[in-house]
Length: 143
Length: 128
Image (cartoon, rainbow over all chains, first blue to last red; front, side, top):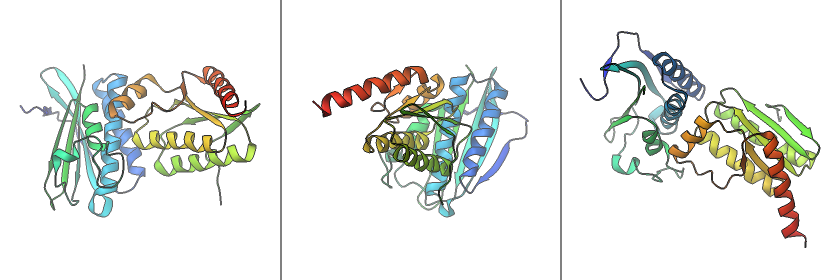
């Protein structure tokens, strides 16, 4: 079993991020799943906020300002959690190390999106290469 | 044409606005414009922004809240954000959004007292 846990046989929620109304959808779906697996209020709030930041990253940086989100319930031993995958076909991130550093931004923003989101979840993996898009996977486990 | 997106209450010399629901970016920007306009129009000396009904405040919303407070100050009034939910406060600090310069209070009542102190400090230093 990987660090991200095994997926339950429950149908995942998959939808496209194309405009800012989808940010609200991301928050809603994450809240529903967080409640379903029994995350406490603080952990649910952190997960939803991290998801909101990552979805906004897609709108800001991805090619065509679009991407796809997959939200699913996962388990590891007896613990349950929520896993969310944010994928886009954007320009990719040339320097992943830098992108995960506080204050780094290529757009004059505060540069909190990725490092901030990482602090809010239990596990975050970022896969990217210049020209081939970016995939960010976050997991939050129940306590 | 300008559009009001949130109800604003005027109590004495203070505007009170309560944000609620799941706010999209456009609405947040409209709120910013409306509140700045309302302060200028009414000429009040203070504004309280109650966020106790917001269950999520991400970096964008937080940034705009800080901007509203800064704009209100430029208009010569004081503004404070009140009622930040504990879970939201924990999340914002871990996210790393700089909000330390914001005047905040636990609830609207304490917010009114805070505004009063800020007004006194203002007149104390600016008008000897």
